[in-house]
Length: 140
Image 1: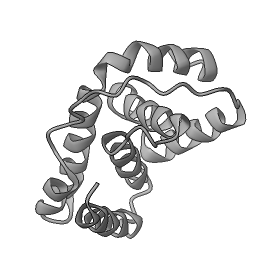
Image 2: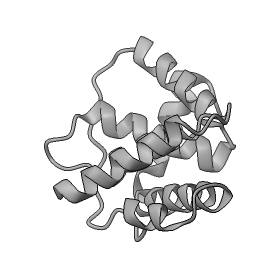
Image 3: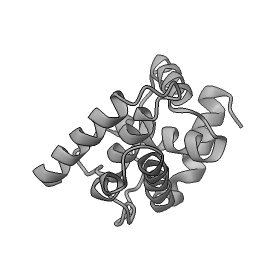
Image 4: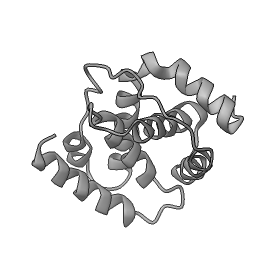
């Protein structure tokens, strides 16, 4: 990951933390970035939590606040986390694309599109994530 991309991520983080929306869109940004930038040095639990967050947001319509609570529940159920197989491409949208959208509803929509792009790239891991969510959180 290039330092410039990390700087853009920090800029987007500032935007989402100052957002003020009780749905806590910030969590979606954290999850999308973690899943998109994962590599062989990433911790398996960080990647798994990010994928769980994207699944819950995109397929179960969870807000960022609800995803955050799900992450807390996962953390209480410590286990040996296994790294999902990493796809070669992790989404066609990047942080720079999100920041190119005008702040406000357009940027918020771009965050959602970015999440969808990253989740789509990780779709081969979906069955494992769905099983984990069902088994650990009781969400089907």
